[in-house]
Figure (cartoon, rainbow, N blue to C red):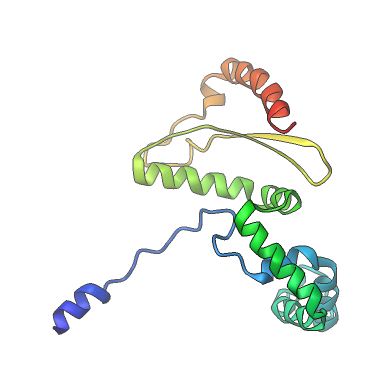
Length: 180
């Protein structure tokens, strides 16, 4: 019985790679961080005495979120809880997506390309587009083939620059069409 217990539970689990951009279990904290960002930043500044990004500032962020949450009226909190459920059911709002794309787009794409190669041997080029917070259409081509796998290869752009230019000429109008 002891042997069975250890064989079922005693193994070290493989570390999960963080490759998903958005949390699968959205908490009220994420909604508050998005909707009450300025109040949270001010509270963290008040508690730490430092500007955002300072060496001790991040240590006060969680406390600042809690303090701001505790100061909100119950009806506002209910509204944020309703928003959390809506985000889970119908998708994240555009403002949240835009911030996440700006902040995590490159690292997520590299993680996904590494994961695809490690698990399936896939090499890929990813054409992405999104509308940023200023309302501008942003398009990025991710090609991490020179970084994934044991054999380092040239990127598509290095090997076929004219072909990539032609692909981009078709991609831009499509990206504009896709984003309305």
